[in-house]
Length: 238
Image (cartoon, rainbow, N blue to C red; front, side):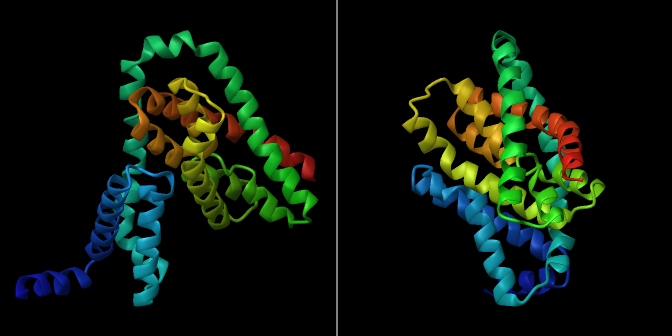
């Protein structure tokens, strides 16, 4: 007990405290997911966010202080994304056989994601800068923030909307695909990565390696295509 207290005192004076909190929250969230047989509502990312946010709220810790430690995890997002090339290489033959329908789905999915978000925002009378922040909601956070900042929107709001999109997609993708009776792991994974970026990709890998591979492909390609299409779409707002 005394040793645990000494560790807490040490961590509380370093950024490592919030890195530790983040890792512990995800560890607990993963156990919850396993205990519920990976129920969609027990998504580890969602549960970890809730747990971490609760700790920050109870301790009155500002986000800037938290990020001093959590930035180490944030840094690893880049290598983790690059590491998706490993399953892509392993399943390259499967990918090549589905290349044409995959590219068609990419174009349609990317356009629908952008146009639906912007159209809904305009119909509801949402301010332009918020509509701009909504437009790249289906790509990974770093890419979305970069796109929105370049276009004069609020990158912080964009990050929040991206996470909400990912959480929603991560929860809905499995029951929705089951309801639609879509059994092809390639299609399920690609749809998850296309609509729900990293969170959807993580969920797809929990289902199968093939689904995760196609989700990773969708995540990367959609980020590239969205970075081209969103400035064009926002141009029409002017």
